[in-house]
Amino acid sequence: MQPKLPICFFDAKTGMLCANCEARLSKGEISRADVEASKAVAQLADRVPELGRVNLKRAFEANGSYVLEFDRSDMASLRSNPLVQSELEGALKGKVWLVGAGGSDRKFLEDVFFPAKVLTVNTVWLPDGGKKTKVIVPAKRSERRIGDFDKLREAVKRARGIELLVETEREAAAKLYS
Image (cartoon, rainbow, N blue to C red; front, side, top):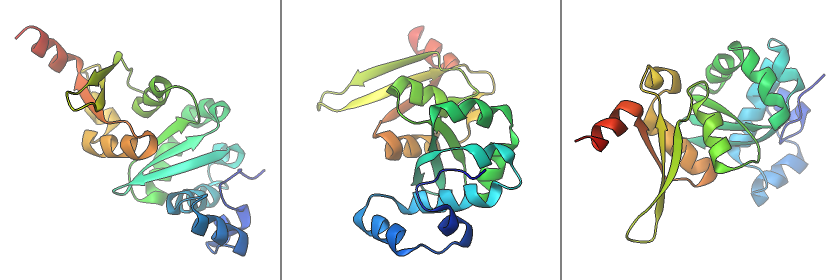
């Protein structure tokens, strides 16, 4: 079985885009990140069986980090094998976050922070009319599991346009009681 990708599976395997996929890239229907992620998934599909059955919807790239949106139904199988994420990170040469396509911003953020739990998600309205989304995660080893918060902020902004503030539980409690 082969994965469903934003570009043709043959193109992803060979690394060359057909006229149709090239036209879609030129029109902006797909992005360069979609192409790179499709290539990575196609190359790994033989070695990592979970990737052979997925439907990659979209990919977003920010400073060498990637947010990959899969069908929501694929998320359980992708998370069941920790090798999937590390193999994709090796193939794409950067940090990778796997998320389910669609859904609310909260569900998106829960996917991004997985396996860390999201304790709260709040919208902070700024005086200039802008808004930021504040996420509080448990303090225990969260940075080690999630990775670099700066890369995460940039990737989330590219994928969903969310200005992200991340605090650990300890930081939030310290602000509350200081």
